[in-house]
Structure formats: C-alpha cells, structure tokens
Image 1 (cartoon, rainbow, N blue to C red):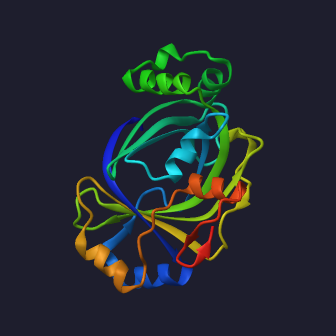
Image 2 (cartoon, one colour):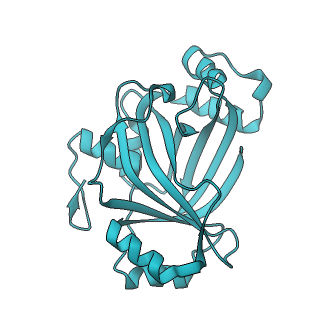
Length: 237
C-alpha cells in the first residue's frame, strides 16, 4: 500500500534471549500481524560519494533516504514500493508509492518515467533522484516479525534478524543473500507510534535491560564496510 506515514520511532538492540523474555512478560498484549515472519528486501540509493549515508551517520536534525522495497523476493510483476523516508527532529515521515517491479526497473535503470503511476509522491521521489543525483548503493534485507500492541491505537513494533547486505548485484530480482551485519543471536526492535511512545512499554524494555540505540541499518553497514569503528552496547559494528 502506498501513502504517507508520520510517526515516532525508537530502535533497540537485543539478544534472542531478551526477545524471549520480552514476549514472556507481554503475554497476550502483543499480537503478530497478518504477515507473520517475512523478509524485507531493499535497494538503497545514494550519491557516488555516499553523501546521504555519511550525512545520516553524523546525526543531523534533518536527513533523508530513498529506497526500493519489496516484501519477499519479487518477480517482474510483483508490487514493489519506492520510498522516500525523511526524519526531522525525531519524527519520521515516510512517503511511498507502489508499482510493478518491471515498471520500477524501467524508471530507475533507464529513466522511463511511469506516467501511469504519476502522483505527488512520485514527483517528490523523482526530484530527489535527480537532485543529488542518486544511484543504487546497497542491497539490504532482513527477516521481520511485526506486532501490534493490544489496546494501543496504531502502536506497533517490529523485530528484525539476520540483517544482511551486498554491494554487488543491486537488483531485488537477484535473491536475498548477503553478508550478515550481526551474529545470528542479535535482533533489532523498532517501536513505532503516531504521536508518542507508550511509557509502560518503554519502561518494560528498560526493566529487561533493553536500551534504545541511535541505530541505522544502512549506516551501520556503511561504517562496517568502510572501516568506520562504532560501538553499541559494547559491541563493535
């Protein structure tokens, strides 16, 4: 589904054991959504000099990224999403539009503007694509579970594992293999809410020694691949 999303997000690093403890405490207050365990695949776009990711690493007040996303490994006819994600003073704004994979490839690889999918969001994406200009920079995938918090309107969290990437074969049709960022035991939890994060859930995470981290998958992979040393919770990434 395309559209515009505005929300507050906070990320946490945790182990497989901590994830089990979290679900044991939550009980029936967390319900997995209809997609169950699924794989999210992305191609991130950046300048030749990686300006967007380097800017993001420096934690500016405003940052943005452009990516092509699929849920699972797509075929040429599968729906994919072009997403422009912006962050301003801690609030995330995500604008995305849906189109078939073959249409997205024609646009991104050969410059064939998809007139049949023309909309304001696509115009904004097109502007960003050509303003910098942007090119395929990284393939990034992870296995995700998404949960809704019962009784909390539009508050959800996701748990990602097996975060993997590659800097070659930058095509969603080329499968989801890549080099792992973390040990298989590590998970990334993202808590997402339209206005404010529920205090009880944040407190629960703290009680379980699960602490927030200013963490970017793309940024962390860039730092690892380009030998920029950073530590989170005592772990070098």
